[in-house]
Image (cartoon, rainbow, N blue to C red; front, side, top):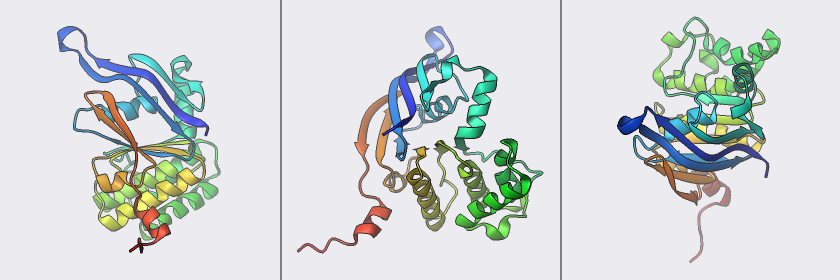
Length: 243
């Protein structure tokens, strides 16, 4: 399948000399179109650094990062910003919603910045909010929403439009089990449409929705494994009736 994200021998070092911190050490990772990959590991293992480097928000100290075959190392700041706006959806732990915009306006904003007419962008935004059970909160401002509602608005904003790569840092951290399942179903639907998704999580149940789980420790990939059949797979196949 077509590779959407490629990390080749990527390392990230903060600082110099004896106080240098190695956030990532020669990481290789390829995520194909249609694939959902979960990243797991203890605190400080490099999970968040991997996401920010994969999304061009931070530069690797060494190694190559490519999105849709284009190397980030050779791009100007302007080209990277355009790539992020058009091709990458982010879900951050702190949501990064604009307090002066309603939920629908926050979700529609990336589409409008990319040239979509306001009316069409709002229609798409409302559909995304409805998918996450927030249709009745579309006109509310972030300060009027609960933490879980703000998280779902941030997820809706990340997935609208023709995003080829979705990067999510603990996307269900503030959600109950019902809303967590709705988020994972939405992520699976997006990958079925040809996007690639990388999700950082510490929850094994969430990781079970992924096609593959990548384990980091001390900045290195220490294991990769196909995820166990997740809730969606079990629903599709039904209970095991073998005697």
